[in-house]
Image (cartoon, rainbow, N blue to C red; front, side):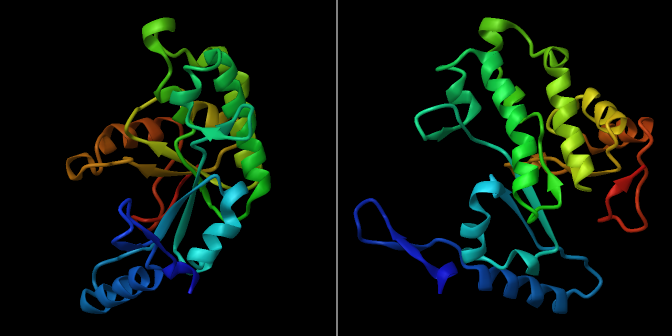
Length: 222
């Protein structure tokens, strides 16, 4: 079946499953039955959904998941090959890369209905070449960020508040551009980073008028 497609290791000797979607969903169902008082939600972060929604659907039924996040990690700035901003900064003027990122956000939002939350809108700012240009100044790209946020808000999507970096301008501009809902994400790649900076993020979101929902997993809304 599609989600059981396999690829060979470099030496051609070992096969690895591309994605065992049935195993993932079955394990969640098993633990839900074993621990009925524990809320376990399924989900996925889908990169570039406006380009890969169909391919993702071959791997897993996105409608079977509780939450689908949409992220933009790569851009095509010529040549037909997509690359991360950190790579593109070495090949193009930094401002051009940032504007290209912000201009693709509305295209991604318009091009896919499969995701409910746009994640880490500051992704291209994370690897801004500070060694050459100094600290990233969002005000230089404010209209691009606001335009991107408006496109997300107008389609009724939520915006992730990524606690890896607490930028106060993100919830401020999001609220000012009509954003109604947010989620929290620590973007943790190690266990010790799970839920990092959540108390500070809560205080920041409350300052801009967002409030918790009835359940801990609900969106925060204004």
